[in-house]
Length: 298
Image (tube, rainbow, N blue to C red; front, side, top):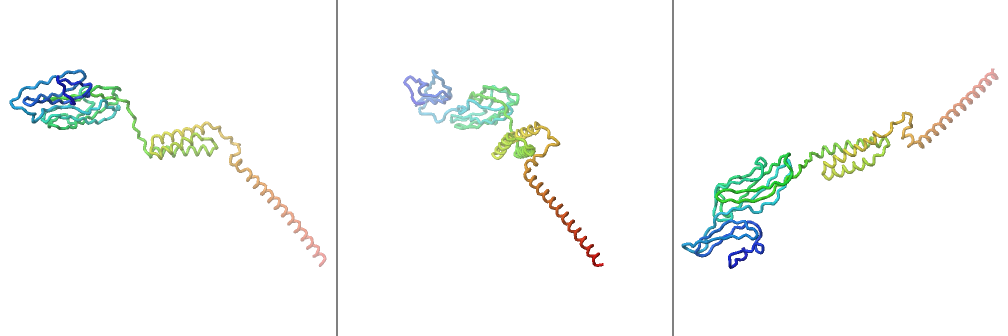
């Protein structure tokens, strides 16, 4: 507290934040009275001191529990587990015993508290309390107003909100399943290209699948690969049936070479025939000359 006024009042809006305070009031020669208070605007609190047999400030302060730094909102998905750690503080120097911890405002099957009982809370101590929220898949979406409580000879409570948000599907895709989808898409794209079909859209998605795979996003990689394969397969399915008498595309692609080769073969054939005829004529002439020679000789 930053200022003590003559009449014992405090202007909260000017000097104090709206939160829990542990107030110690003492005066030489009087017994202390130190309550734990939750202060709000325009609230008057009276603390009365009684005359003591011997004066002087107290050597110890009574136990006073509080829950500082509790988040105003804790968010959890349906079908998920959320671990939140709270801190129970004993602001006094005196210990307190047999303190139970519980939550109100929520079905007990939705949470687990560890520890849920403290046999002794030492003075000036911070005690960690773990609360595990187990949100069912069927949990209704929205805000749940809860209170965490410490109960014993001394109590402390703090309100907060548990916000349940929609279930998030966890990806089970791995690099193996993504790569299998990429390979399958590649095979279908090649099949379409060999048929002379335009699969540019499928190729674009295929390249996106490779980029996603290389960046480690296997879920996106698989989806892009599946889309690429679907596009390529649709192009194949929608293509007209081939004409059995249609000249293959490779013939058109190599027509010039085929014509040159054909002309060469034709020239070679003509030359071969000409040579054969010429050789046959020469042989006949030689044979006639030989017959004439024989007749002349004999």
